[in-house]
Length: 502
Image (spheres, rainbow, N blue to C red):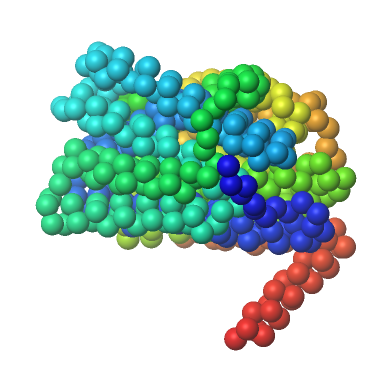
């Protein structure tokens, strides 16, 4: 086997690590974020091409594809990521990578026939619309290729293979978007046609992904490494399935409580809230390999706290900014038919920000290898999401659905962070983070009330004031004087570097 070398942030200074994380957030995470951003290009095309109800059906089946893919991966991506950095020997790394891939493909091969032949019965439980069985079977054909794409992109990310990762992530997105635009504008495609475009792209990039990671793949000599990883992977498998099931659950409950049209409105609101998800995705993609590669360093917690503070301040500002712009964005992308979707943007964006922050503070669970602890937080989160939607949706409509989803994120963040401290204590600066997030939450909900009982102009003024207040609070409370000076120094250095280049 040819030895594969790659770079990592091990051995860098605290400032160097932050630079490394920023670079990877821009490259790896930025590519993942760009992939999601392209869906905002196709969103207005699809929203205008289909009725609100049909767009809701399409969105449902795309969410279902993601759910089934995650179900068959069943935590193996998290396990490989954790144990990849545990071992230094390239041969051992190739064994655990290859054993994991074989396990995923065999599991898919065993269970896929049951889903295929039981599709008529299963689909009626999920969503009962004309042609749903055929749409479900097209989704099943996606699964082998989506599994391989996920596997190869993760491996390229863990090994910091930036060029190949960009080819996979950006290439997939651009090719699929191009085919989709052609299908809609030239062939006036149906929902089935959109799913077939997705299937074609998945096939091509599944094969390409295997080509890029071929140097890491060998025939497994045994499955000892897999047995080692399964203990870690099983809880994460359940967690990932629960996490992926939640969006499908949200849409199913919305359909049952509020009707099919509101599923389309909710899907449109999710697309706008996904603008926060672009940053979250960029951060998450870079944070995983970065955080695990430096955890053995004595001063790792200093880096973790720096990242936490800057991330929380940035997220709060972005939540306010997105909420301010939600109305014109929806009008621009989806026309006034989707105007009622605006109400879900703040709670959904805030929920994503809180969830992303908890990925930082729960790092102790990954370090301690006690992955089962995360299972508790996800179960409680899903239960609270379900209860929140059932209680609030009949009263507040779509806003109640989004509130239920945000409640689940808050519960998950609190429980997982607390359990992480029990498993692997780290010296976190929690107080200032909680203050900034509470300020953001209170201001956002107060603005919502103002819009309902006063007018839209007052709503805008409250949100703008909240944005400025969070900026000042973040600068004065999150960062101490030394950290402020360091941040100013870093910014000046970057600006001088850019000025020198141009």
